[in-house]
Image 1 (cartoon, rainbow, N blue to C red):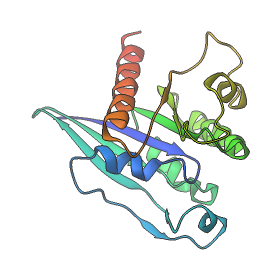
Image 2: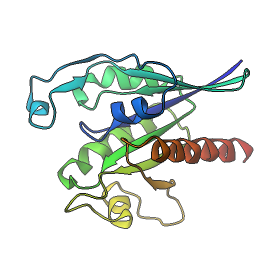
Image 3: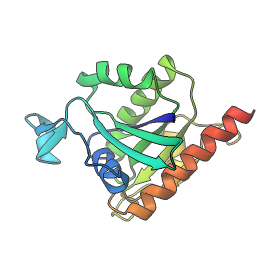
Image 4: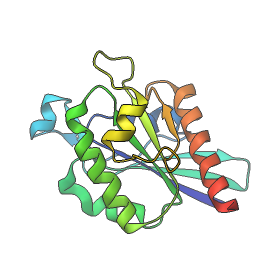
Length: 179
Protein backbone atom coordinates (compact mmCIF):
# COMPACT_ATOMS: atom_id res chain seq x y z
CA UNK A 1 0.00 0.00 0.00
CA UNK A 2 1.23 3.48 -0.87
CA UNK A 3 1.11 6.07 1.90
CA UNK A 4 1.21 9.77 1.14
CA UNK A 5 2.24 11.91 4.13
CA UNK A 6 0.71 15.39 4.19
CA UNK A 7 1.54 18.03 6.79
CA UNK A 8 -0.92 20.63 8.02
CA UNK A 9 1.02 23.51 9.54
CA UNK A 10 0.43 27.13 10.48
CA UNK A 11 0.14 29.50 13.38
CA UNK A 12 -1.78 28.94 16.61
CA UNK A 13 -5.51 29.00 16.00
CA UNK A 14 -5.33 28.81 12.20
CA UNK A 15 -7.40 25.59 12.27
CA UNK A 16 -4.88 22.76 11.92
CA UNK A 17 -6.42 20.32 14.43
CA UNK A 18 -9.95 21.12 13.30
CA UNK A 19 -8.88 20.62 9.66
CA UNK A 20 -7.67 17.10 10.40
CA UNK A 21 -10.67 16.23 12.58
CA UNK A 22 -13.05 17.35 9.82
CA UNK A 23 -11.73 14.90 7.26
CA UNK A 24 -10.08 11.97 9.07
CA UNK A 25 -11.73 8.57 8.73
CA UNK A 26 -10.25 7.42 12.02
CA UNK A 27 -10.45 8.98 15.45
CA UNK A 28 -7.74 11.62 15.40
CA UNK A 29 -4.71 11.00 17.54
CA UNK A 30 -3.83 14.29 19.22
CA UNK A 31 -1.51 15.69 21.81
CA UNK A 32 -3.71 18.56 22.95
CA UNK A 33 -3.13 19.98 26.39
CA UNK A 34 -4.34 23.02 28.29
CA UNK A 35 -2.81 26.21 26.93
CA UNK A 36 -0.73 28.00 29.55
CA UNK A 37 0.86 30.88 27.64
CA UNK A 38 -0.54 33.62 25.39
CA UNK A 39 -2.20 30.82 23.41
CA UNK A 40 -4.80 30.66 26.19
CA UNK A 41 -6.11 34.01 24.94
CA UNK A 42 -7.14 32.29 21.67
CA UNK A 43 -8.19 28.84 22.84
CA UNK A 44 -8.30 26.53 25.85
CA UNK A 45 -6.29 23.64 24.41
CA UNK A 46 -3.32 23.51 22.08
CA UNK A 47 -1.30 20.88 20.21
CA UNK A 48 2.14 20.23 21.71
CA UNK A 49 3.45 17.43 19.46
CA UNK A 50 1.17 16.56 16.54
CA UNK A 51 -2.27 15.50 15.37
CA UNK A 52 -2.70 12.43 13.19
CA UNK A 53 -5.57 11.47 10.92
CA UNK A 54 -6.00 9.18 7.92
CA UNK A 55 -7.94 9.01 4.68
CA UNK A 56 -8.09 5.70 2.85
CA UNK A 57 -8.49 5.51 -0.94
CA UNK A 58 -9.22 1.92 -1.86
CA UNK A 59 -6.93 -0.84 -0.71
CA UNK A 60 -3.75 0.60 -2.21
CA UNK A 61 -3.61 4.30 -1.18
CA UNK A 62 -3.82 6.18 2.09
CA UNK A 63 -3.24 9.78 3.07
CA UNK A 64 -1.70 10.30 6.46
CA UNK A 65 -2.37 13.81 7.76
CA UNK A 66 -0.05 15.23 10.41
CA UNK A 67 -0.84 18.53 12.12
CA UNK A 68 2.01 20.48 13.65
CA UNK A 69 1.93 22.61 16.77
CA UNK A 70 1.69 26.32 16.02
CA UNK A 71 4.14 27.63 18.61
CA UNK A 72 7.74 28.03 17.49
CA UNK A 73 9.01 26.51 20.75
CA UNK A 74 7.79 23.18 19.32
CA UNK A 75 9.72 23.60 16.06
CA UNK A 76 11.59 20.35 16.77
CA UNK A 77 8.28 18.65 15.89
CA UNK A 78 8.04 20.67 12.67
CA UNK A 79 11.49 19.33 11.81
CA UNK A 80 10.57 15.71 12.54
CA UNK A 81 7.26 15.84 10.66
CA UNK A 82 8.43 17.68 7.52
CA UNK A 83 11.37 15.35 6.85
CA UNK A 84 9.19 12.42 5.73
CA UNK A 85 6.40 14.49 4.18
CA UNK A 86 5.38 14.48 0.54
CA UNK A 87 3.62 17.87 0.65
CA UNK A 88 2.18 20.38 3.07
CA UNK A 89 -0.46 23.03 3.51
CA UNK A 90 0.30 26.22 5.40
CA UNK A 91 -2.88 27.39 7.10
CA UNK A 92 -3.06 31.14 7.54
CA UNK A 93 -5.82 32.84 9.54
CA UNK A 94 -6.69 35.63 7.09
CA UNK A 95 -8.15 37.85 9.82
CA UNK A 96 -5.03 37.95 12.03
CA UNK A 97 -2.38 39.88 10.08
CA UNK A 98 -0.22 40.23 13.20
CA UNK A 99 0.49 36.49 12.79
CA UNK A 100 1.55 36.65 9.12
CA UNK A 101 5.19 37.10 10.14
CA UNK A 102 5.02 33.88 12.17
CA UNK A 103 3.38 32.11 9.22
CA UNK A 104 6.23 33.34 7.03
CA UNK A 105 8.74 32.02 9.60
CA UNK A 106 7.06 28.60 9.51
CA UNK A 107 7.18 28.65 5.71
CA UNK A 108 10.90 29.51 5.77
CA UNK A 109 11.59 26.79 8.36
CA UNK A 110 9.83 24.12 6.30
CA UNK A 111 11.45 25.17 3.03
CA UNK A 112 14.91 25.12 4.58
CA UNK A 113 14.42 21.48 5.50
CA UNK A 114 12.56 20.09 2.50
CA UNK A 115 11.77 21.32 -0.98
CA UNK A 116 8.37 19.70 -1.39
CA UNK A 117 5.10 20.90 -2.92
CA UNK A 118 2.99 23.15 -0.72
CA UNK A 119 -0.15 25.22 -0.86
CA UNK A 120 -1.55 28.00 1.27
CA UNK A 121 -4.88 27.49 2.97
CA UNK A 122 -6.66 30.69 4.00
CA UNK A 123 -8.90 30.15 6.99
CA UNK A 124 -11.23 32.62 8.72
CA UNK A 125 -11.86 34.47 5.46
CA UNK A 126 -15.40 35.26 6.59
CA UNK A 127 -14.21 37.17 9.68
CA UNK A 128 -14.06 40.95 9.92
CA UNK A 129 -10.68 42.30 8.87
CA UNK A 130 -9.77 39.24 6.76
CA UNK A 131 -7.10 40.03 4.20
CA UNK A 132 -7.46 39.27 0.50
CA UNK A 133 -5.44 36.51 -1.16
CA UNK A 134 -3.15 38.93 -2.99
CA UNK A 135 -2.30 40.75 0.24
CA UNK A 136 -1.58 37.48 2.06
CA UNK A 137 0.73 36.39 -0.77
CA UNK A 138 2.68 39.64 -0.40
CA UNK A 139 2.80 39.36 3.41
CA UNK A 140 4.24 35.84 3.08
CA UNK A 141 6.94 37.07 0.69
CA UNK A 142 5.53 35.83 -2.61
CA UNK A 143 6.22 38.90 -4.76
CA UNK A 144 6.51 37.13 -8.12
CA UNK A 145 3.00 36.33 -9.40
CA UNK A 146 4.45 33.57 -11.61
CA UNK A 147 6.19 31.80 -8.75
CA UNK A 148 3.49 31.29 -6.14
CA UNK A 149 1.97 28.18 -4.64
CA UNK A 150 -1.74 27.53 -5.07
CA UNK A 151 -3.94 29.24 -2.51
CA UNK A 152 -7.33 27.97 -1.39
CA UNK A 153 -9.92 29.34 1.00
CA UNK A 154 -10.75 26.70 3.57
CA UNK A 155 -13.18 26.43 6.44
CA UNK A 156 -11.57 23.85 8.76
CA UNK A 157 -14.94 23.14 10.38
CA UNK A 158 -16.50 21.91 7.13
CA UNK A 159 -15.59 18.49 5.76
CA UNK A 160 -16.35 19.48 2.17
CA UNK A 161 -14.10 22.54 2.36
CA UNK A 162 -11.25 20.56 3.91
CA UNK A 163 -11.69 17.79 1.32
CA UNK A 164 -11.40 20.35 -1.47
CA UNK A 165 -8.19 21.72 0.06
CA UNK A 166 -6.73 18.20 0.37
CA UNK A 167 -7.61 17.53 -3.28
CA UNK A 168 -5.85 20.75 -4.36
CA UNK A 169 -2.79 19.74 -2.33
CA UNK A 170 -2.68 16.21 -3.78
CA UNK A 171 -3.19 17.53 -7.33
CA UNK A 172 -0.35 20.02 -6.79
CA UNK A 173 1.84 17.21 -5.51
CA UNK A 174 1.06 15.00 -8.51
CA UNK A 175 1.66 17.87 -10.95
CA UNK A 176 5.00 18.61 -9.28
CA UNK A 177 6.02 14.95 -9.58
CA UNK A 178 5.13 14.94 -13.28
CA UNK A 179 7.43 17.88 -14.04
